[in-house]
Amino acid sequence: MGSQREFHLQQRKGRRVILFPLPLQGHINPMLQLASILYNKGFSISIIHTNFNSLNSSNYPHFSFHSIPDGLSQSEASFADIVSLLSLLNVKCAAPFQDCLAKLLSNIVEGESIACLITDAGWYFTQAVAQSLKIPRLVLRTNSVSFFLVFAAFPLLREKGYMPAEGCEPDAPVPELPPLRVKDIPVFETRIPETLHQVVLGMTNQTKVSSGCIWNSFQDLEQISLATLHKEFPIPMFPVGPLHKYFPASSSSLLSQDQSSIPWLDKQPPKSVIYVSFGSIAAINETELLEIAWGLANCRLPFLWVVRPGLVRGAEWIEPLPKGFLEMLDGRGHIVKWAPQQEVLAHPATGVFWTHNGWNSTLESICEAVPMICQPCFGDQMVNARYVSHVWKVGLHLERKLERGEIEKAIRTVMLEAEGQEMRERIVYLKEKVDLCLKQGGSSYQSLENLINYILSF
Ligand code: UDX
Image (cartoon, rainbow, N blue to C red; front, side, top):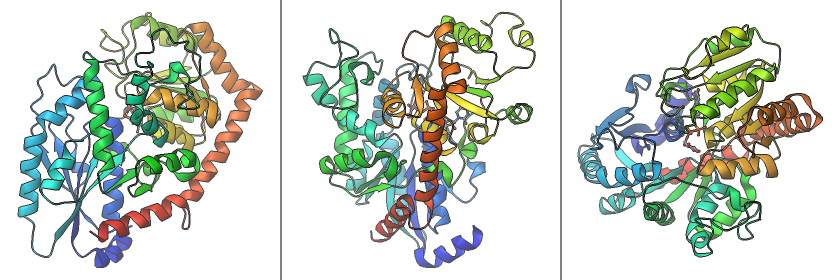
């Protein structure tokens, strides 16, 4: 890697890229992975980040980090209303970000030049700042292309009476957006619904006028969506993913990963373990926690379960579980606060991933050929779950009530029945496509080359 960078360094001649991740785990990981890729290709890297969910710079000694005050109060810095959080961040960070970027541009060292700014699509205010400071802005979109198409269609969905979808038949198809049904239309719980529409317009309009969009996805997975999107967004598109295949996410993890997961997995038979995690934001209630626990216990297969502090509303961690729950299982269950997820999915003992279908989790599961049980909670997860279960057909959508009997049935279907075996075969095929797209001549490999040349052309 080192010598590869030396080689590229000669070509890049002191070109610096400034990146600005959204301070959420699912957005930080792909942005830091992209930064590492660009560094490896010979670019110098600056990262601007908020105080909220501040990054651990010691894992990236070669990057320069610049922290900006976000001005969020303790109550504002909460995931309970993610739409309001996003909207607030875009207001409160505007001035500090502009100051920081202007300083970076004026303090540039001799022999160096700043090629461009890359921000998360969620930082929509940055387009105006970039234009005023005359620096090209590229957007990193950390969700799927298919979801972005739905997201961009929110004004249309609202006009047609789907948002909110009161009075619509939940199983009815949405003809404007196949393969979605009414119940797959993304839901974002927010105090002020109008804020959602401002955020949607901000993100879509400011992406449309950006210098280009980088996708954590790959051609073979989302070919049709990419082609459709390109008609609506005639800007350069770079599907370079899956980004974690270049660099793992562990170095940008905000929580420390419990390494006990791996020796525990080492003791389990091949493809026998149910891995359960709902990511960094989703929350459930105590009743749901108990149904999950009993569903897992009753199916009599080993499980590794991530219960993040904060996952269960109103509880610190797993206190609502019955006393002695794990002991009763005699080592068949292992609960951690945060796991080294990519290693867990790559482990030969992991048989199925019961996931909320955050986009990173979905891609990570595809890359390790682990079929999924889909339990989307909000937003893009609902679209991802629909694609996983009905387009790529590599997972089972847990659509009914979260109830122990239903859970047990779903786990058995994927782990033990022919339907599950077919999903496994299809996801192995998808994994092979991923491996090919990253090799020389593959679509993501070529997109990355195009991206580098594009950045060098600024
Ligand atoms: C958020 C949104 O909720 C999601 O819908 C969107 O697609 C991205 O932003 P999050 O819910 O955290 O993300 O889910 P996801 O996208 O799956 O990202 C979670 C990341 O944390 C993954 O890279 C995963 O490997 C990592 N992780 C998760 C761990 O390292 N350990 C864990 O125990 C769980």
